[in-house]
Image 1 (cartoon, rainbow, N blue to C red):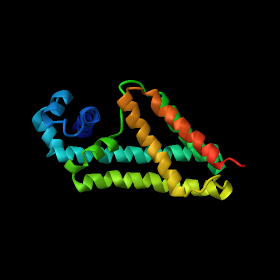
Image 2 (cartoon, one colour):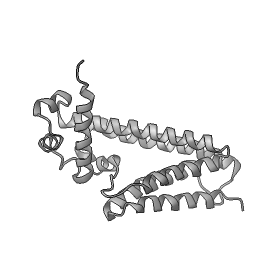
Image 3 (cartoon, rainbow, N blue to C red):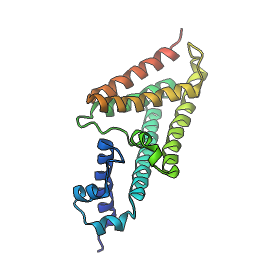
Image 4 (cartoon, rainbow, N blue to C red):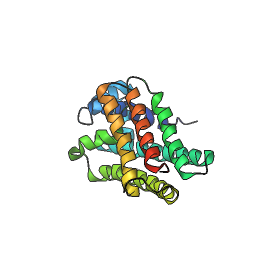
Length: 204
């Protein structure tokens, strides 16, 4: 039976992703990835022709996992509650539970790592990051629209503004937790975001 090359491919990406999260894409060299992944140069270049190909494969995998995680969490929230506001709060609660279990070293966010060095990254790779950001905005915005139909916001606000606030909190919480080296900070900020949504849409 032939060996499954996906195992080695994923191992290389795992090592490279952690390296990018720690030192950035510019500080991640093919040589260092080869050394830490404990593979030969031939093996590396069999799977990835260039560092650019590796960067593209990593963000595509990250985005695909992110899309599935979002969809699975929203589906679970919708199964646990009929009310759209409760669904949104449960959705956030699932991510709060996930981030609360994270310990040092805090993983960080690959989207943010790429954005920091967007000038050195091709447009097609950054397009993947933008696509996933807009995916979050659309899906969250659709849910917020359902909420607003039943619970008018207590202050003037648009659905995409609320969706962007949630997304900003997610990204900002990951970045701040990484900078401050305080893993619990991420879940604490998501709790504050959930509190905001409860206050925003609570009946007067």
